[in-house]
Length: 84
Image (tube, rainbow, N blue to C red; front, side, top):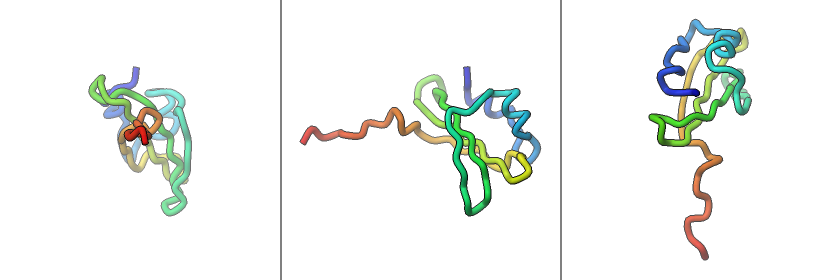
């Protein structure tokens, strides 16, 4: 099970793609950020065991973790709040 504590074991500027795969497994989604030439792996989890969240792990061109960022998982966001 993925948790904030588990993600915290991934060291920015040190961990590699292999380290991330070994620690937390395969991502739910992958994407790219062209401006920084980052590959982003996104993982679904429950923040604090409650909130549906995505953790985004950003890798540089050498496969090193440069940034991690979490936020709400849009898959679970309420889209139509008003019935009209």
